[in-house]
Image 1 (tube, rainbow, N blue to C red):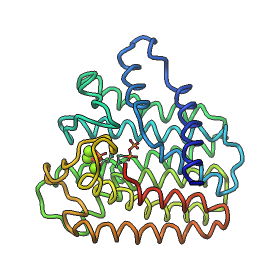
Image 2 (image 1 turned 90 degrees about the vertical axis):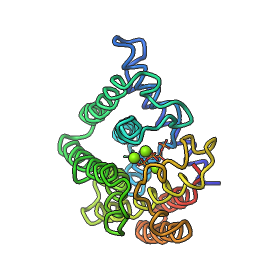
Image 3 (image 1 turned 135 degrees about the vertical axis):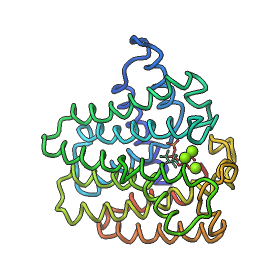
Image 4 (image 1 turned 120 degrees about the vertical axis):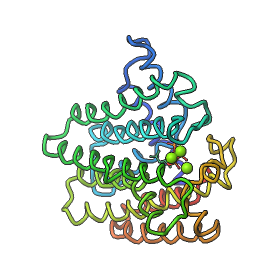
Length: 293
Ligand code: IPE
Ligand code: IPE
Ligand code: MG
Ligand code: MG
Ligand code: MG
């Protein structure tokens, strides 16, 4: 219950900030601005900005207003990644966040450009924040490397070119920890960077983030099988349809669930090192593993 209140409160703060960061839909060229706002505001748990904020707070950060744009930059990048992920040349999906995907509403060209725009905007937002230049550079380094070919893009490439192949444990872990894990890892890491804790604590956040990020994608795989379309907001059964390499495809549903729970426990044992201040992060970890959407 306490964590539900936390999620609700932070979601509102994040959404208000996103609203102020995105250009108005009336601004020329309207189509692109409408498409950005459509994908950003049609739904979403805001879990990456919320993780970043709780990492920042767990590390003693006390200037949330200054940190908010950086937290929101993660949501911009996340939104870019799923607009592109849904395109016909990628997963070819028609629903996202309970609504038609960007390319079905705005056309493929605009959806492609909307993803590009959000990716670029994330860095503009970081540059425009009130942190010192050194901190901005460290945050940009962390986020850009988490999206690159050693991060999200690398995971996505193996995800799409491996469709129909037999999954192996190594390949699966690579795909999941890169395509989804890396941005979650970066979310926790930038909170610690901005709170200016010693490097040891920054790396603890990264380690917990990589466990939590992998767990997050295992649960996403499970929701593709067991989820309720009206709750999840995206069409199920797509992974087996495309022959995707998923945890349930290799290990079965039961074992995959246990693996996610083990990763949850490992992440929580790292968050415990932050004492009382780490409790929210542990609560968010439970939320992520037990979620139904
Ligand atoms: C879905 O992410 C895409 C993945 C990386 C698995 P979320 O489950 O966080 O989706 P939203 O943001 O709540 O819609
Ligand atoms: C997506 O993985 C990871 C991203 C970088 C968006 P999925 O393809 O499983 O995500 P969903 O299920 O479409 O949200
Ligand atoms: Mg995909
Ligand atoms: Mg997809
Ligand atoms: Mg999925």
